[in-house]
Length: 249
Image 1: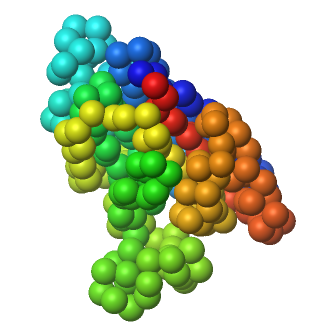
Image 2: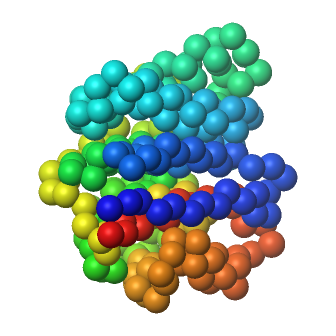
């Protein structure tokens, strides 16, 4: 069994790209990370880059010592906290980026068990047999509106508070990531999509299912999803980034 991946990280209609993604994929495990620096804060492209690369670095260092430990939930959470600490340290060294922060979504798996961690509104979708099995809940005011029954989940995309986040990485106080554990082995037909809001805002979940189901390879599915996005964006659309990962026999 192997995990095939494809990714994109595009500037969109913005002056520069504050998204960043990184991954480490091997025959015995994987770490996938997507981050979105908050666009209203100067230097958030630094926060997203430091966060993504630190998580994969911490995962690889742990895996080199003990592969079983690398996928334990407490260690997956520690990767995120070490990224937060690195971002905070960098901000202290460089006052110009003192307001920078980022979202993060991460999947760590040894293919027997999988841990999903996230902060903010960068999402992880988990599909089984091309059907959506699980998705992360955004840390945002619009997600709170969903949980209060004020709007349906689908309407987050157009809600007035969609960009108001309740949790980020790199701020003055640290709130641990949400951590979800899937303790069954991955099987052929399983797939993950990690993506920023600039991506999922324009690509609907049922379309992700359709594109995964009609594609043999992740790059094919991702190309179809990007075409949907490009047909809907406005002139000043956000940066957009995604990793598509498919489990193959």
